[in-house]
Image (tube, rainbow, N blue to C red):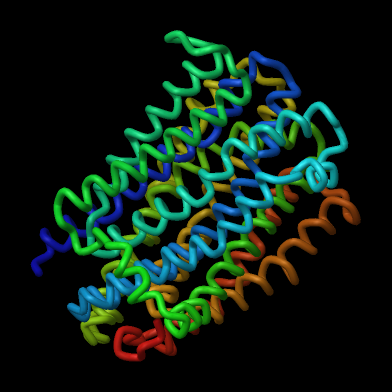
Length: 452
């Protein structure tokens, strides 16, 4: 493969994922924004439901990532039958995980919602929302698995196209159901729930239509689910995927803790973070796309037993991610006055906080980018899940978060230094992750090890 075709392949694999990340970020809060006119109870209820859905989505992402790694390696080994088997097993495991959650959301959910929020009005509205959207948990799990599987074969445009259609449909359906348009009665928050459910169902249906119309290898028959998803295969897959799911949950809980404790530094800090989050999301979307491309290409090389090529790819993606990170950070830094000008009506204290975290982000975010690509794109591509779980957990929960909390409650430092502390865990992870890659332990052909 010459340089131009290689770069084109990286671009084709990474850009659609980056665009879909931005799309999901933009669409993710559609329900919250579109019920804002109904009142604060509606906003609080939908926000609480969104957080609960997010926690389960994190588990789904861990499962989908395991599926992606195994399919990428088996595709590299040209073992298409095994790719289908991995998909079948993942779908069955995903269903087994989500069915109890659907039951939890559907029946007597007010009894445990009171532990989260004591407001009876918020609980009543949230309860109804969860009941309606409960089936969307299983649908979303299937969507994420199919997306991961098709991307692992190199098809990143299909998930983007289907996701875009579903996202637009979600906003349109929200408008119709919430406000009572086109002859429908106004359903308020329940309308937002129905819009989400129908849009998700449409997304899965479009995926299935494309797969079966193309007679794709992932157009699975029900009989194949029974044949491939034996108990031994399920147990082997869980052994491989469980560290990933725990890792994702540990990460999500830790990030939520950072956000919660940030509120103790002042309202201006929370407001500043709320404004800055879209900038962070847009920045890291590109590098998540790059990490995805890295994982797929390295997985294909490992599955084909081309260990030297996998090693060269790991070096290339480390270098290109650093170069891009420095370039984007420099660009953001010079655009800072223009971006801050968009928030000229913001309170001076909040604007000053945004300016401070902007500068810190531009100076240090390359560290997060490097770890992101090395962990997601390299170590996980080789199935080094237990090491990643260990280093993430220790860096975040034993070092990073305690220091962050100490900066707030013990030292009572200014917000800029508190924000600086959010980079400590990534600084800590850099050396062990680098040394792990250099040891080449992750250079494993999982398709030959029969770990599925």
